[in-house]
Length: 58
Image (cartoon, rainbow, N blue to C red; front, top):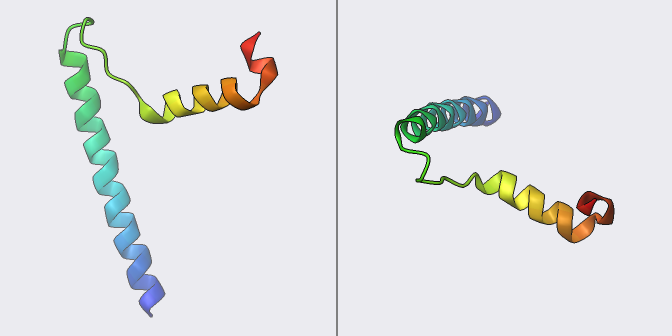
């Protein structure tokens, strides 16, 4: 039975993160283009690509 409780907890946490991301996206739209926001996961993926995949640089 503890597994079911853990899944319920994980689902509620995921829902909270999704709601927070929606709020952050809405907030970012209201700022002017001069204010840059960085998506950490996209930046990390790009840096990994350049660091480990030579064909990515082309």
